[in-house]
Image (cartoon, rainbow, N blue to C red; front, side, top):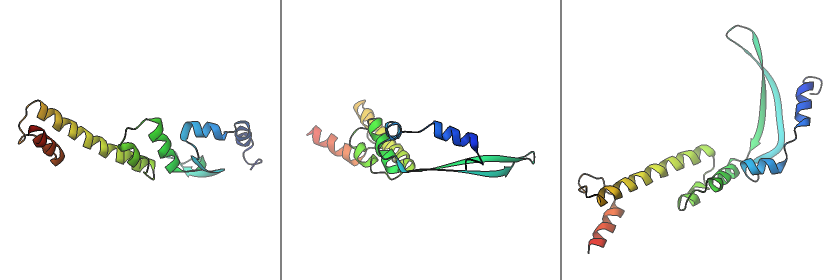
Length: 137
């Protein structure tokens, strides 16, 4: 490897990523392995010349990264407990989007009812309807 890519090898040796730096940026145990695999491939471009492409393969522990993101962004309960259990960053993103839409609907419904909009106009969830009727008694 040293003979094939001498400058790249020097760059990798010169810049050592310490475990503490990775943990601070991405969470404890974010890296699944301390091995970084470098490879080179070739691809034809539109101008028919061959491009040399460097591939970097780093194994990560997405669950650890998800937990770190939930803690870093101070996700409120009860969303925190379900969000931190998501297996991937993509699943976390989808989960938070769904929970955000649900919360927005609840807020809209509650504000509409407080402002006096008739129930037949507002789609009221059964939980809010139950609270409203029990408070009226």
